[in-house]
Amino acid sequence: MGPELLVLPAVAAAQRSSAYDSCMADGELAGIAGQLYGLPFDDFVGARTAAAKEVAGEVPAGQEQRSLATEVRSLPKPSVGAWAVNMLAALRPGTLRELAELGQSMRAAQSALDAAELRRLGQERRLLLNLAVKAARAVAEQQGRKISDAVATEVEQTLRAATADEGAAAAVRSGRLLRTLSADGVDVVDLAGAVAVPAGAGPAGAAAAGAAPSGAVPAAAAGKRPAEQPAEQPRLRAVREAPRRPAPSARERAQAGLRDAEEAARSAVREGRRYEAELAEATAAAATLAEETQSLREQLERAEEELKAARKRRDVAAARAQQAARAADKERRKEDLARERVLRLGNTPE
Image (cartoon, rainbow, N blue to C red):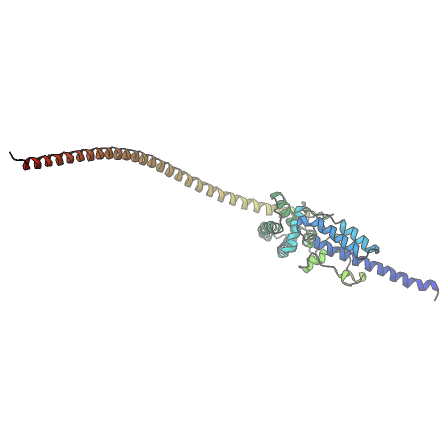
């Protein structure tokens, strides 16, 4: 065997080692990112700087550590809406799991052109989205930040997109969302630049497993060699539990969407009529109370007039009583004087 043949195994080993180290670095970056994007919104920048310094200081002379520190320092700060969704992934993963499962059911019903099931699932989605947005508000406030109505709308759009597209569902559940999402007319979500470290953390696997924590280190970082890694998908994509059915045509999707919209419109009309009835009832009650209030005001005015007259009569009677008392006192004094005079005359001889 020639010397040149002895070099090849060494080169191959070096290449495998380099690839393995790269996967380890990606896994470590994903783990750091998962921890950073699970922090309160205002703590992100300081924690990112501290994490980069810690990584850079572990092995000062190592090129891999310096590169990892640079990547950590380059992790973008999420928008407020994306951060609120990340808080759901970190603190309320069950909420996102329910939405992901609902999305799978809706896509299955749409593939089967099951209009009745789509209508039922559409109503369920509205309820779940409402509860999920309330949960996002609650966890955001627990982390020291209230979200506005505009941000809450962005959160709802993002969660709605997660029910329309498997890749969006995986991005949302990764816990490393950078911006909010929205679904277009054909239920395809643009995920470009939407997730921090999308390849290294394997969000598709996390979505398929159903409960992988956002900061979990992937298998490559745990000692699994790159050759054993599954092929990476070009987009974040959840694994289907059932075989893929033929995708419906644009016309069929549009018809299903129309039926869903018609049902939503009918529901809105029913709700509007209910509110109209409540308005009429409240208006009638207000009119009755206004009449009663006017009657009570008139009674109060009459009572005040009667009270004023009674007070006047009382004052006159009090004055007369005082005069009568003085007159009676005067007459008693006269009576006493007359009695004394009679006594004196009775004691005087004639």
